[in-house]
Length: 443
Image (cartoon, rainbow, N blue to C red; front, top):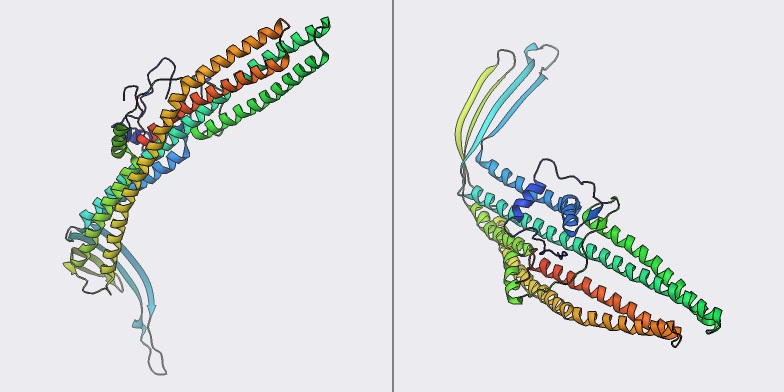
């Protein structure tokens, strides 16, 4: 973030991100949208996005579901208790011409309670819990990545609003200049020093500028709508942006930020956790070759009429699958293939990280070098316009000369503003591809 007369915003520090995620998303009540004040800074817009953007909420709930799957895996350590009861009325009598036995008509009552406890499964359950923890870590990294993406989207939308506002200011200044030129042309025409065509030309210039201003107002509204959408707000009161498009000198060491990206990129972290989970899954499936030892206890009542008979049993069970049609072998081979695939995915991800960061870095360098050039061009165009305007006001220039100078000045102003926007956006790109942590002035 670039702020006027401030150091860059220290948002989501490296070690505090996971704590921030827990505070934001694992509370009983997810943070609600607050009414926006009349002023909105880039920092405020990012906070609003963290509270309201549905992409973050979706990822947070996926992360929460993964946390609950760890609890499901741990449940195997605890006893499994079942209760059952049933009642039925039966009639098994046989009738013929000579016999009839009424005892074949009776009520049947059955109730039982059973307890099963895993004793030992050759570390299969601990491995399964570890796999679920790794998957949870992967979802946590994906949540961090979603936050990084949303933060970048907010910055991009915020800068677009600033750009639209600055361009609107330029167009309003242009209208003011054309109004002055029209008044000057009318004055010349009245005294007979200029022809009517100069008045008409000034009127056309003013009308075209007003049409451009209408388009600019619409662009501002569209940019604000995009910013509201990035913040996750479908409807919000009007506000004014407090930040401005400014230039700050940044010195970036590419090799340093590349190493940081390899360490901090949450999408790469997610793949690394998935790779570890895939490796552990191979060991987990191999445990299917070993037996499983369980203890069980049953207690119940059954009989035809009250009082019914009491019965109970206690014992152990050793389960061992001798042959399953080679299903285990194929599952292990599939797991090994998934593991190798994940390793290749990590290599591809690192290559993409290098390419993304390199392109962002080159773009940053280009924008940084363009700032002083575009600023100088703007100053020169302003000077040229002032000269042409002065010549016209004393009657030695012509409106075509002024029009060309004004157009060059306006285009130079647009270029300078767009370069400032692109420069700030290039910093945001470096932050995103670096891993979501801001770059300071001395890095």
